[in-house]
Image (tube, rainbow, N blue to C red):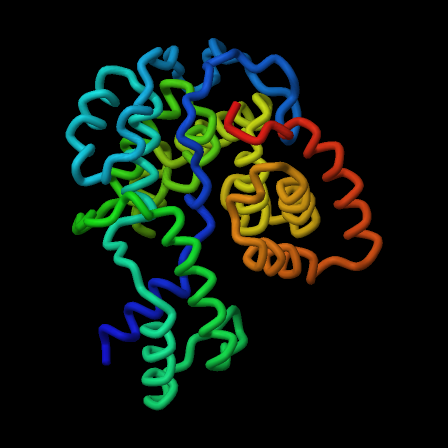
Length: 302
């Protein structure tokens, strides 16, 4: 029974943090206009994260190969300066470790057995009934199937250091998506004790994460809008702010890249983000979001 609980929890808890990574390499242009919350330092400022020009050699010839077959070559190219290869490595380790396809019939069987044994899964403070749980599992598994279709067979005991290593590499090489996502992985390998022992390093990573995220947004990467939503919703890189979180998520929903998230999942997130706000706050957020979204209307990565 324990394996069923673990499997259900893994699928039900699929995070948004590292779901949307485009494979196109980004140009390492120095941002010169304001980012999300004010002016940013230019790319070669001493207060900005280190950035190297991305390699002209992209990993496009490896895109259709199964990850386990292409891994060694991706690592070689990433070490030589291929931002696209590094981004694919980071994506695979962050979201696809241990992934195996699960069909709807298997999910239904798991939910029936878990329900019969009295297992309850909560969403926040509210338990999910069997039908709601099954719908959530199907939606999340469908998203993972799309995201990890070519990345099965990864079996790392702890993929977090690898996910961060390659995302950090891709961000330093100028990949806009990796810069947006750096903050979602920057603290994954730290424990609560690290908050005291490694306080200075954590502060520096937070600074770099904010710089990268604002740089990605200034370059017009819609994924940065989605990440801004997460960090404002959970108070990680920025103070928790429900109206700002909804503003960024609504802006993301207006961009072409929002199709990377299943429609039902996006609608649910928008409803959840809007729930704490009154009508006036929602309208303010939506009005501001329309202006925000204008920066990021390209269907692909910048």
